[in-house]
Amino acid sequence: MTTIAPEQIRITYTSQSADMEAAHKFFDEALVKVRAEAGREYPIYIDHKPVKTAEPLLPDSSPIDSSMLLGKFTAGNAAVVDQALRSAAAQKGPWRRTPWAERVAILRKAANLMRKRKFELAAVMSLEVGKSRMEALGDAEESADLIDYYCDQTEKANGFVQSMNKITPIETNTDVLRPFGVFVCIAPFNFPLALSTGMSSAALVAGNTVVYKPAQDTPLTGLKLYEVYRDAGIPAGVFNFVTGKGSVMGDPLWQHPLTDGIVFTGSKEVGLHMYAQFSAKWVKPCLLELGGKNPAIVMDSADLDMAAEGVMKSAFGLQGQKCSACSRVYVHKAVAAAFIEKLVARTKAIKIGDPTERDVYLGPVVNERAAKKFEQVMAQGKGKVEVLTGGERLKGGLFDKGWFVAPTIVKAPLSSDFFMEEFFLPLLTVGVVDSLDQALEESNKAEYGLTAGMYSKKQDEIEKFWDVIESGVTYVNKRSGATTGAWPGAQAFCGWKGSGSTGKGGCGPYYVSQFMREQSRCVIKEG
Ligand code: UN1
Image 1: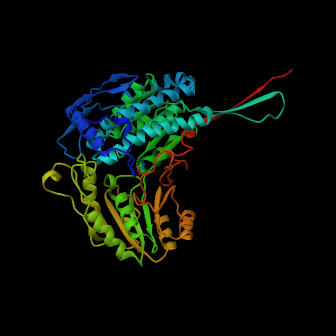
Image 2: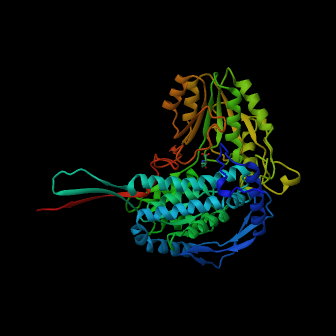
Image 3: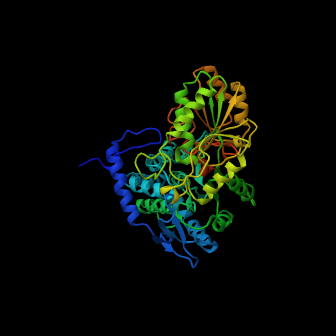
């Protein structure tokens, strides 16, 4: 019998200091519970009250087995959006006036609840997104750490209040960062808990109220986040949970006149559209984390086993559906053949299957659209790229029930659009370069600039990589993932160029303050 508690087991994307047998046992138990609860109907929650609509419910099915219905969710509409924004706006004052230390205390409770519930949260994500156990547990753990890190940040900054200089002896000057008001938080499917939690907890600790919409593919994880906040004591109206089709809900959410700010993680196309339109009357904060086309550079001095391992993990973890995924490699010609051989061998050895099973690394892609996109991209590359491994949808047995595609590596000429387009699929493109300069030039040609990895033993090459690469998150010689695995308080997750709007990332030291605006308070006391 195990005496360890769920919250004592800690698993990140890159390390585990955990009792793995206990972890698997907790995960198995959680899976049974989540499966037993599958198929229920769920409302929207505004003001902590359930809200339904007359529209047909939206099915939430598992990508592992599309006949498995995890739940039926309420299809929100413009009227629901209006109700949610009004509720969030009504609570702006009370939440803003709640002392920051009280907000921190509530959010810390939320982090603790998340740690207690992490196995259930992970089981939900494994079934809803197709995450492997380790990816799902990492997502849940990161979520709790994100909240704590943003609480730490707020405490360290004394609630973002500081005394300023005096110009005359009769004045007192204080600088205060204050919330903007209501943030609309729109989250993607791939890290349905960590990204939702990171964005919303920063908005909340800063004193904003939130209307939150999870991705259409992951409403159950979104609901679990809502329950954590509610159970931790977030007051009614401060965090509102709405579900529905992105095409119906998206525009009304951010276009609503009561929306003071947007925090969004998702596609560049949607993000840039919002950014361009949002500031119609005055400039409003629009915090975007968008896609990536993240390169790894493998130099001739690299440890090739380390590089092959790191690239494989970052290319195929979560089926390549990470903004941080490694989707292109530039390898020096002197080691290209040896590196490619090691990379392909490791990729062929990946265990593919039902990702809720303990040793499966690669599960399905998120939905039918993603599987079809994979086929379309492979058709687009036919005759132009050389398939080194994979290239096809997987068929037979369990693969026929869900959306499974083979982990795929192609070799392409450097001019190929496979090096520039974000696919968000388990598809890695390899190119051969003559020099570091060429690798960096090719890397920087992409519109994106999120993460980048480098394998080299030469310090001057590493320094040059840092100086020239146009990416916000860089890793050197990382075996556990060439371009992935950022963690709160350790690696800020900042997108440059087409990967983000603010130049400051989640997980990093400047995140919370972006949800606030400055007020200078000068008081004069004469005589
Ligand atoms: C994402 O890639 O979509 O750095 C989010 C990582 C994780 C996930 C970031 N923290 O790989």
